[in-house]
Image 1 (cartoon, rainbow, N blue to C red):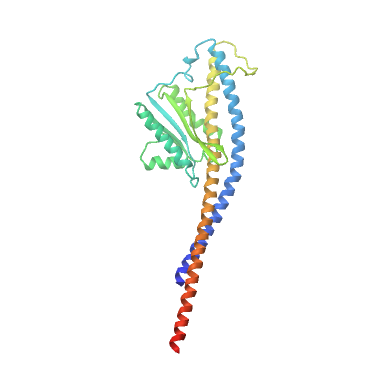
Image 2: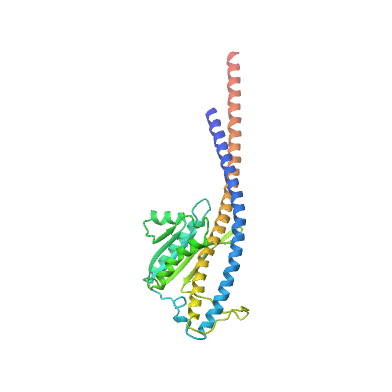
Length: 294
């Protein structure tokens, strides 16, 4: 009985230490989430402005020539080689954040293979890299550390490798997948087609003072802005994913802290019961000894 009490005390101590760790991790994630959320908000404002200007220039260029002839906007084919760029975290302990992204990518891969399209993977994040290597699935390009510390220059360098293959006709489509930030308690899967660019039109309320003269350089202006849009989309996906990661980890650590508290309570009850049983057994043994001496 004594050994049993000792084991339970060790378990309670271990659970309480784990609870301290998960509580500290929750506080750290909460602090980092505030910074990441602010970064994502600023990036979103800039991204919206790029889309606005890109739509306006596209409309002005289209008035002089068929913009669909531009490789950045040409309709995508249903078959061919497709590049999938996915973003996960470098670390775990964030619930289903990473595995949900991987599951979505696997679904997209199966969907394209059903259309006889080949798929290549460009992976950012240690967790996805480890998953695909373990399952012996080929990864064309990968990066570790970029999802934890988003950097515009590195993000642009990474995505431009895929863009160059697209412009050279090697691939027919580029798809970006990441788990994005929705609010403090939830995330949402975001899937966007980077190339060819879709869904960007000029707004009637657009008040830009930008003027593009119809000449042979106007298409080059559109190309440069389109490339800037793709680069920033990659960077924003990293920032958005980082905010979502901290949100998911904050929730996971909060749940772990609560579970540890419940487990500590149940172990304490079990310890008290075992202690009472030990005391009762000792009293019975004492009474039995006294009675035997009479």
